[in-house]
Amino acid sequence: MPVRTPVSTRIRFLQIGLIVAVSLVSFATLTLPIDLRPVTQALDVGEVAQITMQSPRDIEYVSDVRTEEARKAAASAAQLVYSQPNSAIARQQIERLDTAVRSITSVRDNSEISLEQKRADLIALSDVRLKLETIDYLLAISTARWETVQAEALRVLEQVMRRAIYEDKVELAQTGVSSFVSLTLNEQQSALVAELVNAFVVPNSFYSEELTTAARASARDAVKPIVQTYKTGETVVPAGEVITPADLEAFQQLGMIHPGQRWEDMVGAIALIVISAVLVPLYFFRQ
Image 1 (spheres, rainbow, N blue to C red):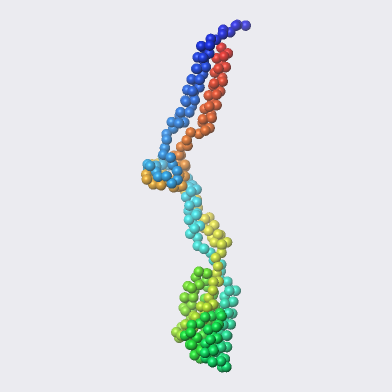
Image 2: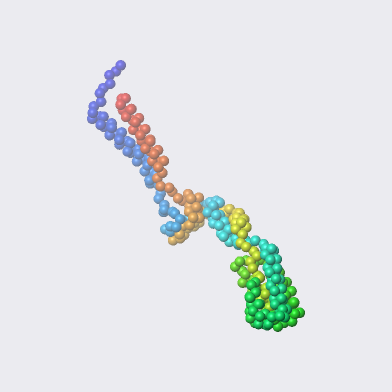
């Protein structure tokens, strides 16, 4: 068995130095290409494009961002949904009006009280607040005309309450009552009918959260996925424009966003160097 010639200390130092130098050079060789990749402008939503960003290639893709924006816009544009006019409320109000006109008739026909007392009794009515001039006219008209007014008031209220009346649209509905009054009545009779009816016009259709949510969901679902296309050289974002989420999505699809040095690359390079640093000395020490 041949005897190994001892290696001098100077050679050992040279070997160690060579190992260190090779390791450093290898590490630099493996990592510098990562650091020297072309650096582009940092692209993020809300930043201003420093240069005009153009598409490097033809591309067609489904834009999740644009699709979601369109669906949100469609849902926001969906109108609020209200319930159908409640017929029970309409019947209740018609009954109240019928009771009120019966009370007025009772006061009109009461021959045992004075005219002043009749005025006071009509002013004290709880369900309807009549103007003083309306009360004077009501007490002065004939029974036949009053019966005509009663019947017309009940008919008009029924017609008005058949339509949807929202909580914030009561005044608008009251304003339109006069248009339902028959033209066979004179102006004073028409005004009396409108005043009686207006006291019993109430909301009969109410906002429905459930129906509105369903309508918005339907509006969202009706929006089809948006396909975005770019041709080579086509401008994605002009210089000076603020980058939007849709722009950032386009950059990602086009591969225009380059990540910084990945930690996986660094770990891989270090592992390779460590293996080299272990194997090379073993080779030298066995010589």
